[in-house]
Amino acid sequence: MRDAGYELAIFPGDGTGPEVIREGVKILNVLAEGGAAPWRATEYSGGGQYFLKTGREWDPEGEAAAHRADAVLLGAVGWPGATLANGDIAGRALVLGLRESLDLFANVRPCRLYPGVKHRISGEYREVWTPKNVDMVIVRENTEDLYTPIRGRLRRAGDTELAIDTRVITRKGAERVVRYAFELARARPRGAPEDGVRRVTCVDKANVMEGCRFFRETFDRVGAEYPEVERDYAYVDAFTQWLVRNPERYNVVVATNMMGDIITDLASVLQGGMGFASGGNIGAEHAMFEPVHGSAPKYAGKNQVNPFATFFAVEQLLRWLGDRHHDARLLTPADRLERAIATALREGQGRTYDQGGTVTTSGAGDLLAATLRAEPR
Ligand code: IPM
Ligand code: MN
Image (cartoon, rainbow, N blue to C red; front, side, top):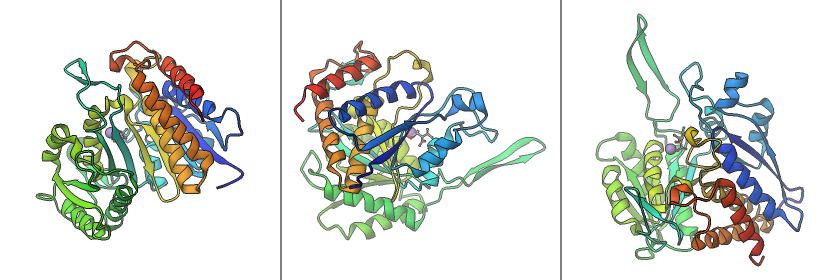
């Protein structure tokens, strides 16, 4: 616990990012009511739209704050036409850049279906699954694999002849993310919904790729230190159908970066869609939290998108920081927020368009704020 409190650096970013972050900040403020909040939240500019205006991806103060802060909360980056000279998206510095420079090696993406949240197939809304089926965490390696910035083109006389992205799997990178997954499986209150077994599933393509074989060997070596946790294996192609058909089997899932990127978007469908998917980019000393849905330019300025992914990101942030500093002033609000989210979702009054409802982004934030204020502390 740190008496002086904690510094939160907040980057609303592009598109719908500012709209959902506004609601996240609203909730942080409600959690701070009636006492001195142990956090100071400061907002900074950055992203693709900022780049188009200023020629910089973020303001220098924000960059320094992100590196100094106790935790970062990011809305989303990416805006049509905002591209760096090398072809990267403008705003990359805030996502991929922070993952690299703060060494945020584990991207932790909970996938849990709350009662009252609907699932959509072919435009129809149904409650297909319940938390009895869907309650897993996908841990995605976050610093290497195909995202390693060792890439380029061979140009001859102005034409591209060849383009290469290098897939790198290191001992250190694999080991630390696998260890994170086993520690998480050990710490979680429950095992898999299907059978209560504490299980880590390694998703890879070890039947083909050397990097995946190495990742799986590392998984076995590190996993052997956790005899109370079952080791489970899935090739990524088979995993996609098992995940949808039998989600209750999964408890903690660990994957390399690119495969983890893909399977977490797929898994979000099981939790009600991307509107509920949050991620914590976790390192040894730093962490950055975000809704996973991105900037959604076509919805920007409409006060329409679902802010619940951001509420989950705020909860993840408070819990990570609270655990790290053994600080009940953060863990208690995290618990309160989790309960209020569950209540609001169960009662179903805050459904935004993606859930077949008509509630606005700010309306959903107001509803959660009221739910929080109404709950006993
Ligand atoms: C994600 C996103 C990012 C990624 C993009 C915005 C670079 O899709 O966080 O999953 O590919 O990791
Ligand atoms: Mn993604």
